[in-house]
Image 1 (cartoon, protein in one colour):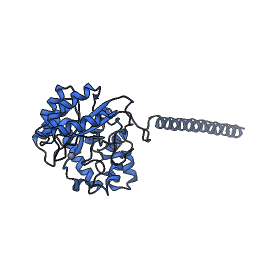
Image 2 (cartoon, protein in one colour):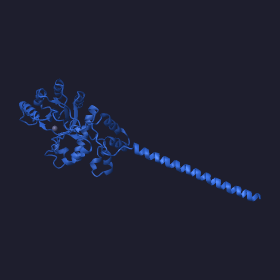
Image 3 (cartoon, helix red, strand yellow):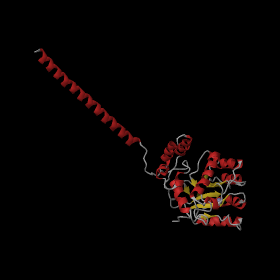
Image 4 (cartoon, protein in one colour):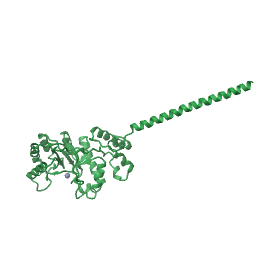
Length: 328
Ligand code: ZN
């Protein structure tokens, strides 16, 4: 009797042990499934989007965030930070088809939607190439006196001096916009290849950043986006700069001040007469040390155009550019 009873008792105990084991396994299994679901939901909600969304304007704080990321020891986290402002920064690492895409991983800016000028805008963008120079401060005074802000596409002609830094800072401090022109201004050198162009661009980018604490998002090709030096390379260079988010501006009004036979009268007449026919003008002028004639005419040009109902503005990446390489 005793043995039968104790056998029954053991069987019952074994059965209840198995029940407990199944219950424990079910609880653990359920918990694992719930945790996995939570992780998946978090990933969906918080992972950065990879689509190349266009922002309307680059905010300095976003660019600043990416700039500070350069100090990160891990190049992957620097790339990740850049990818937040321009998703193409990440694809360069993974596709790797064009080796120059992985050069200068810090050189990305937001891709900005271009907005055409409204009808009747009567807007003029004065742009000055080839400065800073011995004539820059005087030009800044003229612009201040006439309450006009302009855009400076700067170069240091391959030679950085203390004046370069001082004048670049002065231009920025007085509220004007700085875009990159070129470091060397040597057409043969910069248009030899995409790599050569990026190297030159990066040098000027660094000089401007050191002088002003800001990195430009716009630029002007030396000689314009299509010229006799870049026929073999302009398409690839433009595609690469587009990919990195940089906006280039050619012009639709040429003051003619780079012609050897330009006079003060020809600069004034050419500029004013061309602008008077336009709703929007991006005006090419120069601010190298030899362009005194231009400097002497800026005030008269501004006064005349103001009288005709035009207003002046600075370029930014949202302004729809004129392009010599791809005219509309
Ligand atoms: Zn130039």
